[in-house]
Length: 141
Image 1 (tube, rainbow, N blue to C red):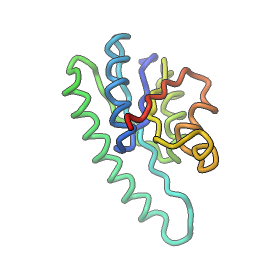
Image 2 (spheres, rainbow, N blue to C red):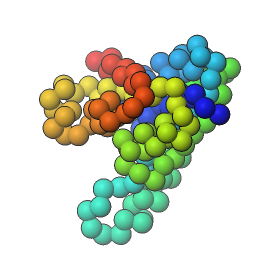
Image 3 (cartoon, rainbow, N blue to C red):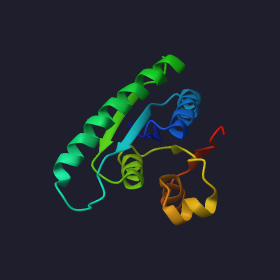
Image 4 (cartoon, one colour):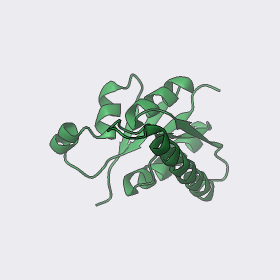
């Protein structure tokens, strides 16, 4: 189905806050919510396959927790999870393309714009590379 809301989710506080907003947007538009998690590790030598499998397992746990929390927020919203074998920003953008997303929701990491740009935050990358509307939910702190 086209027009879902895609949430970039990593289980951190910023994405947990964004989850509530994403559920509200999906409910308002009467569409599904896709919780996306990217799990490709940065190649730094060693056995990447083992790291990738471990991060994928963690992603399954994290997205299942998000699914449960979303149902607690609003049980009427259909929630899907999407584990994408890609770096987080790329994974979110791929999921948005795959589902022809109406919008992408991400949480702000709580860093300033300069450190986010220098450190390559996922939120910064998604905002600047997406061809779709991106809702950035501010960090509560």
